[in-house]
Amino acid sequence: MVNLEFERPILELQTKIDELRAFSREKRLDLANEIAHLEKRLRELTENIYKNLTPWQKVLVARHPGRPNTLDYINYLFTDFLELRGDRLYGDDPALIGGIARLNSRPVTVLGHLKGKDTQENIARNFGMAHPEGYRKALRLMLQAAKFKRPVIAFIDTPGAYCGMGAEERGQAAAIAQCIQTMLGLRTPVVSVIIGEGGSGGALALGAGDRLLIQEHAVFSVISPEAYATILWNDPARCSEAAQKMKITAAELSLLGVVEEVIPEPPGGAHRNPALAAQYLQEALTRHLEELRSIPEEELLRRRFEKFRKIDDEYLKEGNAN
Image (cartoon, rainbow, N blue to C red):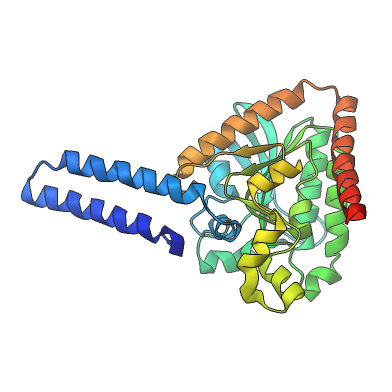
């Protein structure tokens, strides 16, 4: 597993524990008490480090290559997943996956950005940066979900939509705008969850639902800290300082009222215990979907509209005050 610089003390202590276990087996010694003591120290150290992460360190955790991606959560949370491909206009986009499945035996539509686990897979998935055909595929699946009264669950994990010339020529901006517009008026419950890096319009395209949830160490921003630092100071190396100012962490977004819930992660982040992270996520998704299913359709749409209108009004007030 890739280890981040601030995780070095965790790695060093874990290495000591592994060496002591190996020594215990080799010499046939009972070192259970010593190992238990070190494991307790490891848990405490991990919790202490992760409780005090800086915003930039949160960004690094959100980008961790071992972090569970959309496909991992599909495999953990859903049954009978059937992937649906293509936008019926141009082609399929592997950077965005979607289909129909069952959550707790109930049919749902699932879609989300999909990063790879290594360089080869990331190249194949375009590092989770969807092309317009990816967003048109999402649009097609959302409309299908509304037709058959299936709730939509959207996983957000992207640095942003792909901004290459071909994507622009094929209507990237329009595809994103259509996704946002459609999701805002979709006549079925929609729950979006940020599971890693939620960047720019590429993230907004899947985030205009009834509930926007975020995992504890995920981030959500209009621009990356590196781009922010480059634009503001002409120095991408100041990305840590930029992250501090941008209010992109789960806790900050919750205080701003942008997200409805922060979903806890296992000690050391979701990449250290994907199964437990999925368990926390399933509990939150189930609870929110049950609440939304009880709301009449017209009331659901009204609340969704008011939610985003309120966010817009708050930012307008803040902008005028500044």
